[in-house]
Image (cartoon, rainbow, N blue to C red; front, side):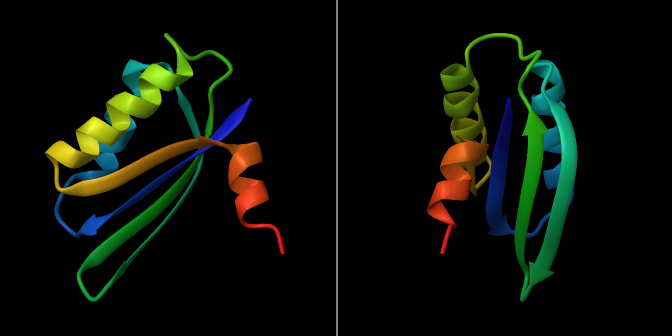
Length: 89
C-alpha cells in the first residue's frame, strides 16, 4: 500500500533528512520525492510504501504531524487513495 507525505514550511537545512530519518525509523520506503523552494518556503511531496511499516499507520501519521509541529513545519501523511480522491477533477 502507498501513502503520500506532504511537508510545508520555512526553508532550513535538513528538512528532507529529518523526514527521511523518521520514515526509516518506521521502516517506510520512500519511492518518490518532489521538492521546491519558493520565496523561502519549502514544499515537498513524498510517495512512500507502507507495506512493511513497523507499527500502526495512524501512529506514524500522528508522529509525523508532531515532528512537523516541533520543527515549525506542517507534515501530513495520507493514504494515496485519499490523496488521489482529493485531487481528482
